Length: 269
Image (cartoon, rainbow, N blue to C red; front, side):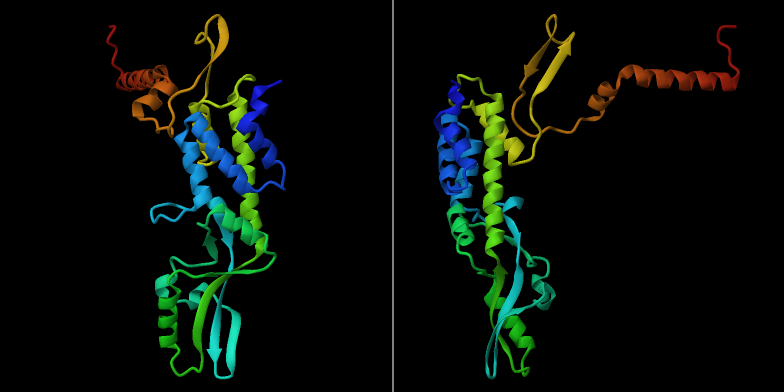
């Protein structure tokens, strides 16, 4: 029996494939697995998904972004018109570069799951809505209507989409770790867990290099895992070496020979 099918990583795999298990529960187990593997990268990601992306310098991941309609409640003489759809261009110019139909969900995953399960449209306040309404109402003086609320209208299916994308990420991440684990391992190594986050969450490349023939003993194959971190672009000399110095020298030699021939110089005479 493979040990890697048991323990936390096995529970996460089985739970991620079962829609009755909440993603919140799976992320808590993922946080604990990161602690066992001593992987700060895995722990940090799980914590952010659980607690939310609220710091000003944190970028909300692409998989947490949804499309929603901008709407407003407008107070008229005979009552309030609710849910009036408006364009982002109807907002003050100061908001044109920051507010559109894309909503970045920085909420903790438990709240997103709750919104996904409500079965109704959710209203999300626009950032700085009070100031925006003040500017909009100032420009509407005498028109007979005043903005009293600005918000996005998001469907429950949009929130379910975010939950399912995170569930899929968990499946991918567990698969990445299990592919690098031995059958007797119950916990991935720190390097394996870090690489899974790097590949699945950050979209990086796998840090595995295969050496063949003369680079491996007796023409066999060996695998080397370099240190973590994004690949740095090759400099001029690295690119030159990879393409082959012989090619460069051959090109230079050909150019010199062409020049000598054109000048009809015969140094051997």
